[in-house]
Length: 492
Image (cartoon, rainbow, N blue to C red; front, side, top):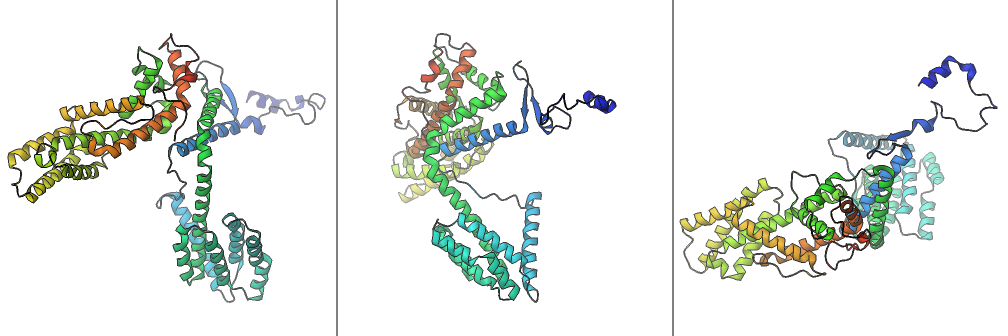
């Protein structure tokens, strides 16, 4: 600013042509380059960095792409979805108004006498431009589309008053029907039933948007194996770039705290292993590790799957007090399925008491129904009261039965993580929930193995920096693995 004021006060002191070469860029206040530079404050005592807006955009684009690759690698069901703004949001209202105005103009022009086709011609031109992206590459088909949707011919027909807009709609529907997936056949059939030409074209554009989505997901599926195979290295490279450009030596406080909390005197391997175990039931009062934050929701989902399993195992253990359950495997399996259904939406400790009340009612009904089928009397009030009291105690995580089942689950997970691609038999109390238990362990193993392949070296660097295990060599990270015998490779 001082430089600018000085230049304003002394205009005759600006550099002469001999002082400034032609075409040489100077750092003036009006320089676009200087206006788009930013100072990234130091996080670790090193000098601040000067970056451009393009560099900032590039690094955050890399991080978004890293997150997308991570999601594709870990989620076999990942698919792109069509974006729709919330109906009552500002964006949603604006979009609805613009779309309504567009189609109202088209309808108004077509209803004039004589009809006006300016909007219709632009619409057909847009459709002609988009269709090649949706159809199977075929020279004859593309040639036919260009021939029929020739803008000059359409304009001549409009000027002569012989343009059949509905005929063009039928042609577009025919082309789309030959290229769309089977899932869109019903939408095509509905299009053919429409009489109103404006509504028809509106639905044609909606179908084309869905077909673009189908095409994108098809291409994603073709590339999924390659993305999964290379995603670990890709993420490591992007993380390294981010650390170099922006993070410096600032560290990751939450990650460091997580590792130090689970520190083992045995080895850095054991420390990281303990840390992974904590992720299954992460303390609510602790910040989640920064390096794993991309999967925070995934770990939270696994955590509650685990808690639901522990609760179900606790419930079935208590419910086996009547012989009609403990001595009848079919009744036990039937009850286990019903309990799983009741507990499936529990995602918070505050929801547990109400769910347990429902479970008690279900257990009471099934027990009495089973007793009735064997011509035995219903459970008496004293036994029912005792059963209910024991069940409702499970709302407390430290209750004896729930604590016992949690310990069995914890030991099972530890053994599974140590096993080499082998999941052991379920522990006592979990037999009726073996399918869900196996699925949960598989998801957890995939998540831990993948994240360790990406961030394992960084974990060891953090531990070495903190002096967690001075006896381990600096080269250890390259060969480290969180579980015995398990390699550091993604296994999505």
